Image 1 (cartoon, rainbow, N blue to C red):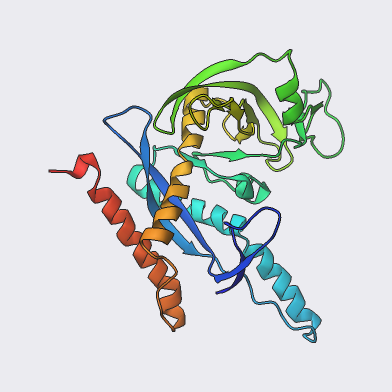
Image 2 (cartoon, rainbow, N blue to C red):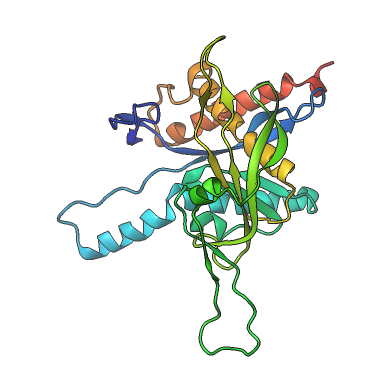
Amino acid sequence: TGWKRDPLGPSFCTNFIWGQRFLQVSAALPDPTMAGRARGIPISLTHAPSPAKPGKRSPEEAWKEYRVRQQAMKVSSIGASRLTELREQLDRDDAGRRLIVSIDGGFTNRAVFRNLPHNTVAIGRIRKDAKLFLAPEEEATPRRGRRRCYGSPLPTPEQIRQDESIPWSTVTAFAAGKTHSFEVKTIACVRWLGSGDANTRLVVIRPLAYRPRKGACLLYRNPVYLLCTDPELPLDRLLQSYLWRWEVELNFRDEKTVMGVGEAQVRTKSAVETVPAFVVAAYAFLLLAGTDENKG
């Protein structure tokens, strides 16, 4: 436990709360009664504490070890290793099943994108000013030196959204209780610094219009810029898979406000680490018991 940034604090002021840091993975369980709807079921909760910082008078060896542990104990590094473990468990049960992982911007980096296991696809959100490139062209004669990973530079995702020469296409997906029609722009075979020499697909999603109340003016959210490690993944499946990522946020709300994760009054180190995982496991079993497939 330690002082952590409050995720529910205002954007203009950084608040700190005493808490723990966990990494959770939720599986999307499709609803057989309605196409496109799914429920997030927690399947993994990993304790991801930060390393203890040495004192000011500590020797240089202690600081070197701290920097190494700091890189290894990053949430993105732990997330990449956890995906590898899930892939190994899935290979023992169903080796042919493809694993599609929807992640937020904190995990869209080289620690995750360059360490994905086989038969695994990552869909993450990137910045609007990210640097993108085309794949390098094949040269007639081999050149000396290191093989090129990046070709000609591309406009930023924000510039692609504003480019009128790139047409919008319509994709339907389920979100917020009903099916919506999303307008998207996409460019395949894109290279990104975080993905290295692997081709990815860029997807730009135009924000949907909404009214906060009847008769009010139309308002818009911010656009979304996605990067998918599989350029051949169909757009409708890509978009629906990313929209299912919101289910993990609903899991967080239920676990903290209803189940009281992190509020247990325990003292020992083992209990502090394992009690939240036990509560989340109970919450997952309750969700499974409430599904239509298990009723009756």
